[in-house]
Image (tube, rainbow, N blue to C red; front, side, top):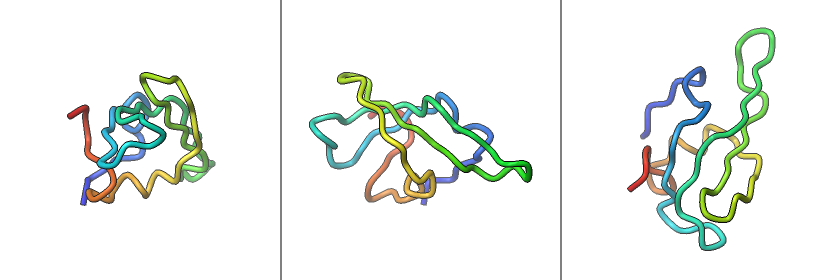
Length: 71
């Protein structure tokens, strides 16, 4: 399980284990918190295609789908 600190998510780099729409390398480009500090919005952007999508940041903890950094 990847260890993730929500406050350090912005601009973090990720590699998809299985390419998503032919994209493999991603970066967290937008994150919003509520008043209690919980993540309410997380957006990830593919480096090559510049496509963005909203993602549940908890999915990044799954090492079968995501690796921290660019591999």
